[in-house]
Image (cartoon, rainbow, N blue to C red; front, side, top):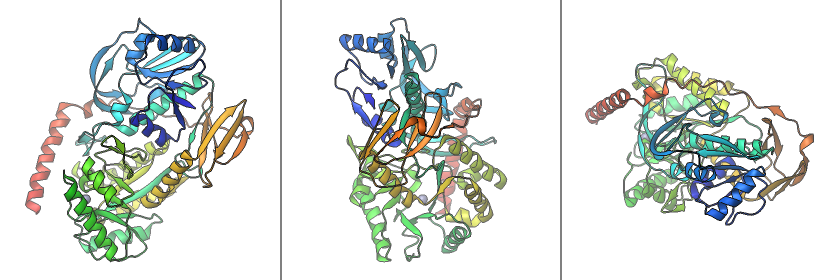
Amino acid sequence: MISLLKDELGWRQIFMQEGIVYNVLSTIPDKIPEPIIINRNLNDSEMIKIKSLLNNGLSVLTNFPNLKKIIPDFNYQQKKISYILNNDTDIFNNVIALDLKLDGYKSASMICEVKYGKGYIIALPFDINQAIYDFRSERKPFYYPSRKFPNEIVSVVSKGAVRKLVVNCIIKLYAAMNLPYLHLWYYPNEYTSVFAFRVDTDFGPEDTLQATFDLENKTTIPFTYFINTKEHPKLSRNQRDFQIHCYHHEVYKDYQRNYDNIKKAKNILEQTGIKSIGFVSPYGFWNGNLQKAMEDCEIQYSSEFSLSYDDLPFFPVINNRVSSVIQIPVHPICMGRLVHASLSPEKCIDYYQKYFDRQLQANEPMFIYDHPHRIAQFPDVFYQILSRAEKMSNLWITNLTDFYYWWKSRLQALNDSQWKIDNRTLEIKTRSSVNNIYLHVITPDQHQAFVPLKQTLYNLNDIKYKSIPMNVKTDTSYYPSLKSNKIKLQMKFYATLDSVLELFKR
Ligand SMILES: [Zn+2]
């Protein structure tokens, strides 16, 4: 299995998302059969050992300061990194760019790949743990060819993209050692991706809620509704997936008001016979006190794009501990943001089609969200968007609550399983009895196979491999303009206009 030199919560998060069993090395052994991640400073004697291991074929992922110690000729400077753009190497497979706004390093190339003896090194110019444990949020534009860019307040660091880049690096480390790379597949069976539709009921009048129920009935897609219980107190159990949005449509800085708000909403739902386990915050806002309030209200999953977006689920960290409430990130742009950016209905459908295509290619989830008043305004546009999802082959269509339960069973399986390869024999030891969880195998020559996770032996020569669908060349030419001052000012202007209009509405 892969090894870390220091147990850090950010790395633990990525390994849990990816479904990798790992170990932490307190000292550097004389033999290391699989790649290692050097995520702390090495002393001189450790450095000598690493160099000899590299000479004998070890693959290593590390940072610029450690690379400098291994290769003294390597030069770098400290630098604030705003974002890192895809440079058309396989390290950036399915990653357009990383948004960071973090202190980091710069050298002749943004990411360094170096052969060392029989070994191989990838060095990154920023700290992974720091990037994953960053809680800043800001208004960010999302690209679509139009005069105005749709935008939303989301996490500063694109954590899903950081994870994807790290995983691409790890796949390369395994290939360099001529070893297959194995992890738990992201979805049940061999589904390519997952789709779910989240509805935040907000301030929609009753008839808009009915329009949303009608839309759900017209499709085969089960929605998850997050209820503003002050506006919609009288929903009765009607076989739909009802969860909590809020009582007051607010997120507070302090614990107590957040707790009271969630608890009151939960009680109102309970009075009508609805037992809820999911919560999504108003405006997608997130803070540690909100997370603590969720825990104490026995919430099991939540979704806040100011913490993360377009990412696999994870447990947020508060007060240096891992929370028990799992975060399920969604795509943060809803129809209102597209209308605001002056996109026509045809272009709105195209925006989501392009998002679906990107996520499907990258095997990333497709979780979108919206509001009843927009659904009532554009029922046909929504029907067409949902129909596009329904038509995609090998896509798992579910609701957020059922996805949560499956993801929990995958986490349990990860906890209960170990696998190792010896002489082309894959030995799996597992206590998991869930029969739809698969191991994904990527060979050094980039073919893939899926094997059911069960207590057994597989001969790797007997498994059916397929080539991995090629990544289309990524157009990144537009990206720098997204980060320009002009766009920043434009977003600021429209955000101010929004808040003024909001004042007149109330
Ligand atoms: Zn809302």
